[in-house]
Length: 279
Image (cartoon, rainbow, N blue to C red; front, side, top):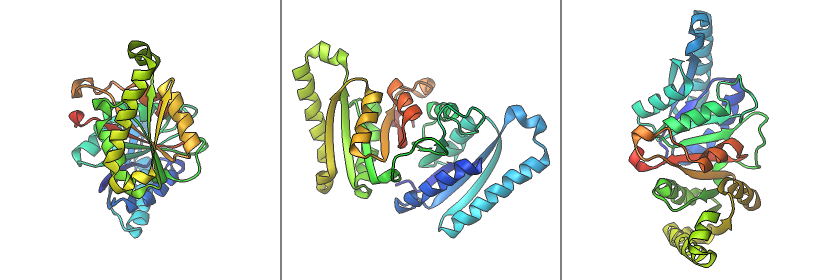
């Protein structure tokens, strides 16, 4: 499903969590990796050859480890802005996935701090798997064991819904969650809103075929990002899947508030899937 993944590998502390996630991706068919390290452009005047050699040494070391685990590995050492370079490399190599680590907003000097991850998912047209690393709280279990899809049934969520359905074969449990917002309830009434949403959730379940017995539906009310976090905890979800808003490549920097809040706060892996019209 994700045959070729671009992996952001900068600090050892970040790389460890990402490399562990690659074990799970290998089970899904990932065989080709591009390891990327980006030296920041505004530090380029101080990045001497010794620093570049050390960065390349680390990449070569990780490449050797991953090749021993059965991957075909390329490495890329760039100078520039990390979000731009990762997005550009993934696009140029036609990668199926970008894998990055996030510490949230607490460590501002980290290469892969939360703000850089948000810049990346605003720019990229490639599905992006964000892995909590370091001292950021982490749920028990790794990514693909128990998946929660948050959907509002819009076009922006179509590709996310498709990815969740394809991942169902590898998951023990799939939770499909829709959160009714107050403005919808006020517009058409609570009864009709719930009836329509439940019907759409049941239609989604039909996509899972023989795996329907592992699908749970949740229809909730409230602020989507907060409700999704609560449902993920209640259901023991190890991964959240969300869609990316944005109506055209020109407006690709738009990111729905729900998606942004989920990425900032989640203690689970987060798979952000752009809508196909952006690709």
